[in-house]
Structure formats: C-alpha cells, structure tokens
Image 1 (cartoon, one colour):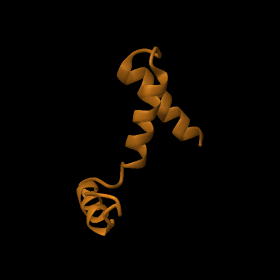
Image 2 (cartoon, one colour; image 1 turned 90 degrees about the horizontal axis):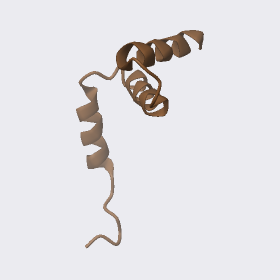
Image 3 (cartoon, helix red, strand yellow; image 1 turned 180 degrees about the vertical axis):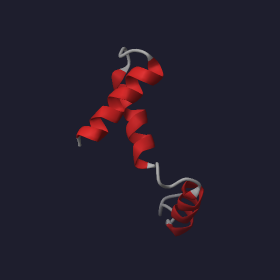
Image 4 (cartoon, rainbow, N blue to C red; image 1 turned 45 degrees about the vertical axis):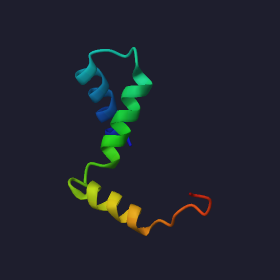
Length: 60
C-alpha cells in the first residue's frame, strides 16, 4: 500500500507540479493504475460489454 501511495504522490507532484486540483489528479491516477495491465484490451472489453448487454425494455 505504501508503494501505491508513493506512486500517486510522485504522479501528482511530478506530472502536474502542484496540488491545486488534487482530487482530479488522484482520480486520473486511479483510472490509469486500474487499467495498466489491459493495454489494447480496453476496446475488446468495451465491444464485449456492448454485445453482451440487453436493450432497455422501454427503448423506442
């Protein structure tokens, strides 16, 4: 856990050179951290989610 916190702090301080919008930067870091192993698999996951979903019953 210390490594994750340290990486987040380095990301915020090093990339954006400040802490004025800390929450936005932390959210971006979290998004990137969670997707770091997907690589090009994001498009395939999105397509699979679209194909596997059912239309809304009230859609016209």
